[in-house]
Image 1 (spheres, one colour):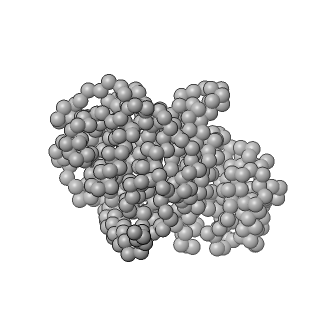
Image 2 (cartoon, helix red, strand yellow):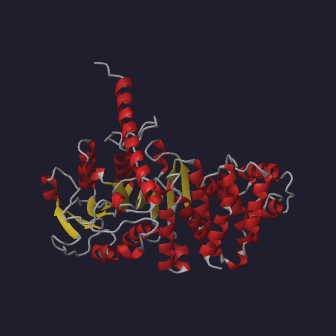
Image 3 (cartoon, helix red, strand yellow):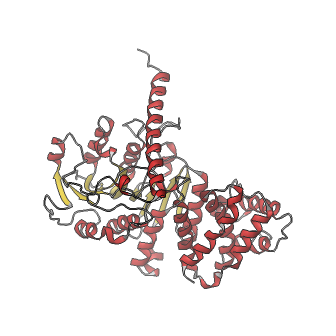
Amino acid sequence: MKNDSVVQKIWALCHILRGDGISYHQYVSELTYLLFLKIAEENGVERLLPLNYRWTDLARHPKEGLLGFYQEMLTHLGTTAESEVIRAIYAFPTTVFSHSENLHAVIDGIARIAWHDVSGDRFGEIYEGLIEKSSQDVRSGAGQYFTPRALVNSMVRVCQPALGELIQDPAVGSGGFLIAADRYLRSSHSDAAYRGNPPRYQGVEIEKNTRRICLMNTFLNGLDAEIFHGDALTDDGRKLEKASLVLANPPFGSKAGSRRALRTDISHRNTNKQLAFLQHIYLTLSENGRAAVVLPDNVLFEDGVGRAVRQELMATCRLHTILRLPKGIFPGAGVKTNVLFFAKEAGHVTDDVWFYDLRSNMPQFGKSNVLLDRHFKDFERVYGPDAAGTSSRQEAGEHGRWRKLSRAQIAERSDNLNWLWLRDESGDADNATQDPAEILVAIIGHLRSALGELNALNAEVEGEEFQVKPTQ
């Protein structure tokens, strides 16, 4: 049985829950509980679960009283399971089911799937497929946080994770970057080599249910991962060690809504959350560490604090490559994005910055035109074989997608990295789309973006109003 067939079968069970007003994101979170029990039975992890609180006990329970038993089961697993990861998965559980009949129908649907046709190393991929399905729910806005798989794969391929490295994502979400890095390593090395010098993974996730999904995802894929609950921009981030490689797509928007103080080592402060995450990432890199991070256009051109952050980045790291991403790949966010590639090396600062424009004269991407690995093939070719971006490179000319600016030229531009040289004949992507669902997503994205700006302004005003002036 193919993985996508299993994903479709599990996803079809979502229809059972729609009558209870349960969102796709809540559904995937609930599946964290149920799928773990079933997969534990299939792959031998069940021995780590307490007796009488396993999949068979749930599946054989009479429909009457099933919901009560399920709630008791979740609480018991969160407190008595031997494995710390399993206890974390079931920590402070809440179920979205409100009727035993619906719970029974979902359990029965999962039980009817031919799990014996799925090999053990495929379970994680199936779960990844469910997470990707969740990201397609335009009403929840989950898509703005889901990094397209083709982009993740391309970032991993050019950064080339190595055995023994500590790989981090400070806004880990469901763990997509960590999973992709681990798959790259396992496909590039023998099992013996991997076991002899395994990589380690760390991530931070602020949302409890998303962390739960990440724990499930990394566990099923066999990663040695520490996934902390908290905000990497606060003192929670001090739990992270110095990283060999950081792969990240920090959430878009301002820091409005949070009153927790930024860490003291994040010295350039304003309400732009992306600028804070960028500072965190270059501060957390170890010597000879490298990073690839998805950031919106405003990070490239914002003045004031934005310029100060870019100057510090280029003075403390070697910013070597910027990939301008196509429009529409984060539909729920309504922003234009880039990937910044940089490395921290003793005695080396930014010299030339190479730009690849994958945005101008590109088609509209969305459900009807999916971003694929092949769209990054030319970028990966010109990037070169060296993970730190030191390969010999040749410009493609003023009509090509691949060009560079020297550090002196960037300084002449007031350190503005938002460099456009190709004339875009494709028009505005939001106006070009004809799919009503994609039009709705674009509208929602613009509204969210505008609301984020208003929230940021409000937070700034409140901060000024309540700021305590130092004594003279």
